[in-house]
Length: 237
Image 1 (cartoon, rainbow, N blue to C red):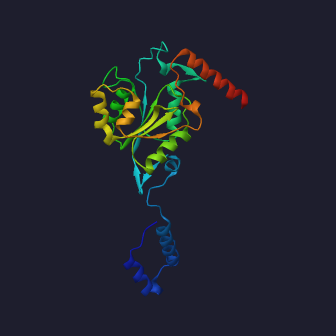
Image 2: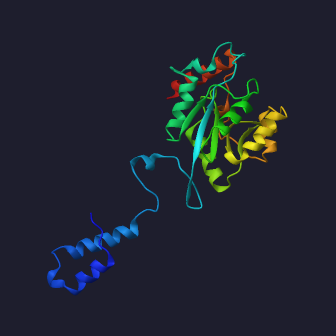
Image 3: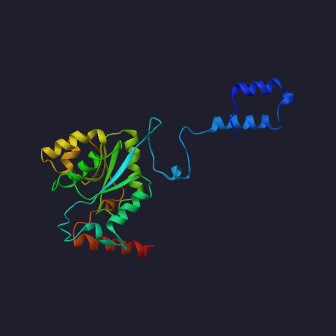
């Protein structure tokens, strides 16, 4: 459809005998289109996308799945451990992809043997986003609903946001890129615990409606418990 300038519309109004048939109806439809058009581009994919909007501006959020741990307690690479027919990495990756957010898997930390903070530092220092949502590869029960709660809370107040369960701080966590110097400072001082990082970031905290979705699979015992949980859910459904 071709848009008419205001001068063209004025010219048409003064020469009604020369106006093509249907021009008035087209002009009315164009004016109505201007009134109802969205300020953001909307398409089939964007309708599905989990967006974060702050004061009318779309925030750029990325997701990092940390998969660089040594898996010593499991005795093998946790990313390849299978649960419900998929690997742990595949399970958490699917949850993120259904939100249509940019996803990276951090398999090698810039600072070895620094725990999960090494993965957080690696993710932020290589990010071109305003913030990164960090997940652990051994948390297959994290839901889309919980991740959406993180995004909504961050849109209201764009500060570092961590999960807290029974006074234990952990993943998921959402950290703005501007906090990279604080993360780097914690690494240089060898403050490798998530709790210390959250405290230094003056973070806010979110709980989980279902505490089981924050479960980590660190050991073979944890894996068997997770498989039993899956079997129980399948029996109910």
